[in-house]
Length: 418
Image (tube, one colour):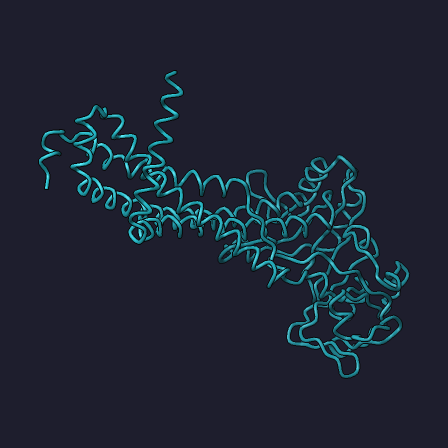
C-alpha cells in the first residue's frame, strides 16, 4: 500500500510539473538550454570519437593481430620527441636477419625501407603524383601485411636479388596514374627512375573520418632495388608476423635480441619501439581519452550553467507560489510532499533538456552520415546513459535547495504572503 501511494505521489508531482512548465514555456526553454547544450556536446563528441576509434581498430587489425612492428622512433607520438629519441640510431637490415635466426616464435618478417622521395614526383605520361611514398620490402611483405592483389602479381625474391626496377601500386595511386585502368606492364617514372608495374593492390579500409589509408598511396618495390637507388637511405622498419598463439613469446625474444645488438644496459630503457595491433590501438585510446576528458569538462560547464539556471528559476517559482504552498500545507500536505513536488519539477525540467539534446544529437549525426558517409560515428551506450542520468542528476542536485526552501515555509506566513 505504501509503494502504491508513493507511485501515485510521483505521478501527481510529475503531472503538476508538466502543467507548471507548460504555463511558463519561454522561461522553461531558457532554463533547459544549458542542459540541452551539455548533452548535445557529450553525445556528438562521444559518437564521433567512438567512430574514429573503430576506424583505427579496423585499419590496424586488417594488417594482422599477430604482427609486431619495430622502429627506432615511436609510431604514434604527441608533441616533440625527447632528445634521447631523436638521437637513436635507426634499425638495420641485419637486425631483421638476426631476429629471423634467433627468435623461434617468429613465423616471417620483412625489413621495410622508406625512400627519401620528399619533394619529388611520380608520373605516367600526363598523370602525376607529388611526393610519392616509395617503400622497399622483401616478398614476405605480401603475407606479413595481409595484402590483396587487384591485378597482376607481387615481386619475387629473384627480382629483389637482381635489383629489378619493378613496382606494385596502391589503389589510389593506380587510379591516379591510370584512371582508365591497364597499369600492368606500364612503366612509371618515380623521382626520375623508371619502374615497370607488376601489380596493383586492393583498396584498404578507410582511416579515421574517412581519410585515405596510407597503404593506398603506396609505391612498393623490392628492398634491394630501393636501396640501390637511394644508398644513403637508413629509415628501416621491421614488420614481424609471430607464430599463432606466440605473440608474447615473440615480443620477449625480439626485445632480448635487439637489446643485445644495440648494446642496451640491463638498467636502461630500450632504445627502440615495439608495437602490436593492441598497443597501437591503446596509443590511440590514450588520445581519445584525453579528448574525452576535455569534452567532459566542457559538458560539465554546460550542466553547471543549466543547473544554476534551474535553481534560480525554481527559487522564483517558490516565491511566486508561496500562497499555493501555504494552502497545500493548510489542507494537510506534509513537508516531504512539498519537497517531492519541487524536486520532481526540477528533475523533469532537466530531463526534458537531456532528452531533447539526445534526440537532436542523434538526428544531427544521422544527417552528417548522409552528407559525409565516410565519416564514421556510432553513439556508445555510456554516452546516452551519461547524458540522460547527468541531466536528471543536475535537476536533483540544483533543485534540492529550492525544494527544501519551499518545504520549510511556515503555512501561516505563506498564506499571508502577497
